[in-house]
Image (cartoon, rainbow, N blue to C red):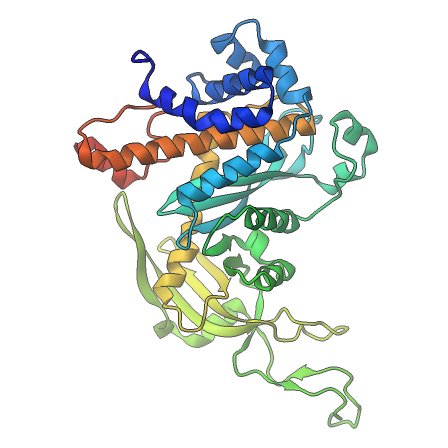
Length: 427
């Protein structure tokens, strides 16, 4: 076994539970081939290039295993959740919700539509994945990836049949998909301290309410137009008479709501303080922050009246050096230090790093099969490969204190923090 690189020996033992869960020698062989193909060298990580590089003549077998074979993914997902939780789960971990696009030229792959593509910064022909990333100490791993199926697909029986979309799959907003995945992670015992996301999800009041109902701490982006009430707002009772003698049928706030932008402006310039949340490659990362306790204007709504005050939250404003201004809601407790809140808000960046590395290094967006099941299998194996690589690198980084050298992987330096790269280079 001395001729086998150490990372391959570790891979064989690490991946064995997944292979056993497939309950078939043939499937085990194809799963191992696909994982090695994703992690191995080569610019293209679709089925044919993988078999050409690692198993000539096996293309049809691998294609059948990924795109047509109806094996159950749940046992493998359960194993992956356990490994993910052991690796980066716990009370200091963040669960980050986002989405990422897979650009497509054709129109026949499942879920493809002309929709917003973050990779290109505009609407384009693509598939959209709702992603949940678990991160601790700036080390991220992909905990879940689910295809968003646009309404146009959900009502198109012909396209659904061609791409084998399950009959029970109905249209869901992205935040509802994310909520279902959160419930799955909790059921599997994945531990995290809070849920983080941008305004694409955070602007949905129903989503925020659902997180609170699950007793989760959350910090989400909002638009500057989101309305809030001062903390001192009171509700004037229903059934009281107004000045004109009319009886009011519904409660009414005794103070008007303001947009998040306007509310922050009323605080004045002295409300802002400069804070640093971590060190970057060029020094500390800093911005100006202001925070105030408010009541979100996301309570009940009666006819044309404004929404009533809802949950008490922190309204946070961030002013970046570039001039960009961002707004956030978080339900951290009233006595939480601002630096703790800022640290949570800014932890969200690592999910974008994960998406980029899965595309560039593991071929997340190279997949060419059109069917629902095929994409589901591809997403699972891409996540497994990424988690193994993170596991190996964490082990190697931890070994730096006792060794002057570490073995590299086929994909070197992926996911290693810049400061840790520098420490390794210095050694």
